[in-house]
Length: 337
Image (tube, rainbow, N blue to C red; front, side):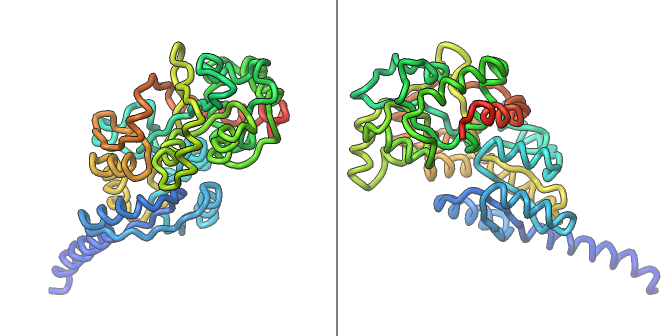
């Protein structure tokens, strides 16, 4: 009798484990946006899967997953830059994911075999209206023009946003031309690189420098700010969609993938697919001023819409990511720190 019951018990036990597997998701997140709370809460309401969130900087979380090894509780890692996704991929943190839903909804240039972008943000050129006009800075290449000497403000060269932009330049123009361009940027610096994108926006608005590059969602955040001083600063700035006559404006992404040592594979896949849903995509746009990665999703964000439409650089992010090591070496050579 016991022998006949054993297979049944094994099946029941296995079913119970599978059901238990779907009830929890350990999310390692380098996204630190309050609007994401609603995103995660809604996933739990829809699926019954509780999210345990561990937050930190991207490089810290990547190192943590590596150190935890096979015992890592991480199921999904999400972050806010293609460079960080590429680093995680290079360290073998992600598992390959096959999903017809994700492949149909996320454009090919915004995904790899192991990770997917779920939102995008553009790298815009901003300029002080009292000093320059839009036609003075129509492209990223124009930022290295000697006429901008002493006018360029920047985050540190090794910042992931800069790294990815330089890697994109290498992908488009080759290493030699990109190095000459980077030397021009260094020659045009108004001050030593420092701070984040919001600091560059304020520096350009104050007249400390004339031009800079910023992620679009920082600009939209200030356009929609409750602080009058932030909105007044934006009135002093002009915005340029770079390279509309060539390869298009460089975009960066927020994205993630399934950790290869996940103990909750089905829950991890459901979460990644949920992030590509219309509902989740609208959270990214309306909650954090990012564009949906899924092109068919309609959003209602007045400030985001105010920026207008633009030609996007559709170079596969995988191709750009391959140039990241060369980009870092290039920045070191030209003294962009």
